[in-house]
Image (cartoon, rainbow, N blue to C red; front, side):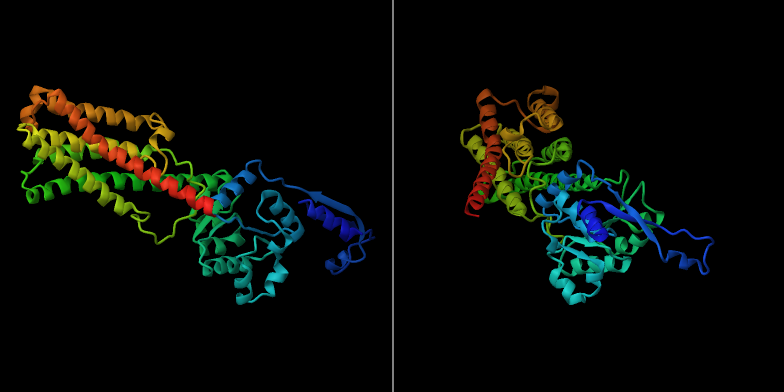
Length: 410
């Protein structure tokens, strides 16, 4: 009856202590003998409820392709109850105790490690076994811990995460990261922020290299098409300094995309240019260069003496349109909102005004070898500059369409 009561309390997520007594006239020798002939007084159930945000953090992990696994010294029934409450485990088959784990050899553990979600009553050596089994299964393992006995497993994991408040110095020294608030939800926030930073690095590279490719294609292809060199060194320097500078820097302030925590983790050996990025750079760089050359050919064919100024303006404004379009890899800028990154919009506007100054401010015309454009010529430049922006938006629309079709088929 007592064992059944203890199991019932453990199944409620409580840690169970048994309290007993023995009345003796004197302490026995040896002292260990005092543990004999005890009378049970009762059971005490202690509960350490999970934080309110823990369940949401676990759900977010699972949506992001991260599998939370509980490793604890608690009774298997206690661990199973808490794991089910948090959404870590769905059935008793996903729970294993330390004694059962000790009977499994490496092959047996490898066969079950993909399905197990809770390890209870484990010792420090078993923690290392669990980490190694997951790694052999091709998983990247982040291990959390706070005690001295957690240090070997923290060191063995791909990323060790120690508790900053309640953790020991040994655990912190063995870890790659320390949680200052000892909150599992902070790990999820760190994953979200890491994905946002990585996405923004890719956006900056895509923006910079696509624009540079556009210049390169324009300069390289012009002689083959019988056209004069479309840009002067001063123009190239201006484009690279002004449009690569502030707008590119403001892309790093972009918020995370809506699906950032609903997509699987990327492979650790995945190229920075994966996911069609290099094709985007080449394709839209070529489009940008060809549009500039078409403007140059039109200007020369119509006897305009402003061909070089028009190419200079088109390439600069095309890059600004590109900066706005690649703010998201999937969503349209009309969905995420023009003002959701106010700093980028401000730098785009300022850069566009600076470009107009190089064309229409008389003092700057000799420096940049530019000439004021007529209203019709400026309108043509603005229309041509929008081609890249529209092209990127169409590419994202096609990508969203394919994703919806794939979701419908699945």
